[in-house]
Image (tube, rainbow, N blue to C red; front, side, top):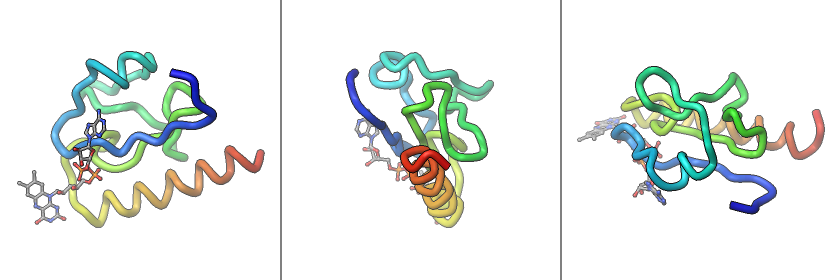
Length: 81
Ligand SMILES: Cc1cc2nc3c(=O)[nH]c(=O)nc-3n(C[C@H](O)[C@H](O)[C@H](O)COP(=O)(O)OP(=O)(O)OC[C@H]3O[C@@H](n4cnc5c(N)ncnc54)[C@H](O)[C@@H]3O)c2cc1C
């Protein structure tokens, strides 16, 4: 996959790794969710994740907060902060 940046926000059940997650070679946590740092950035610096795909099954409010955090992380990444 050739892209400048990828944001994954794909699911409240455990994500299916086969496909985009495996193709991108992303690290997963012990529960099979996409592993991200405090900025929502995955093991591939150009791939961010937000919501249940990174936290596992959760609540909409947490999903929104996760999305906002990742959006800020993406902004910082793109602006070199
Ligand atoms: C039965 C049930 C009841 C719930 N009730 C509540 C509740 O009352 N209150 C509450 O706060 N939360 C509730 N939740 C949790 C809430 O729905 C989730 O936390 C929230 O929807 C997660 O949002 P998300 O954007 O991370 O993922 P999702 O809402 O799951 O959105 C992911 C999207 O990505 C798409 N997708 C998946 N894989 C791919 C792919 N490979 N390529 C392209 N698109 C893809 C999916 O089709 C989906 O449209 C409930 C969950 C369930 C299952």
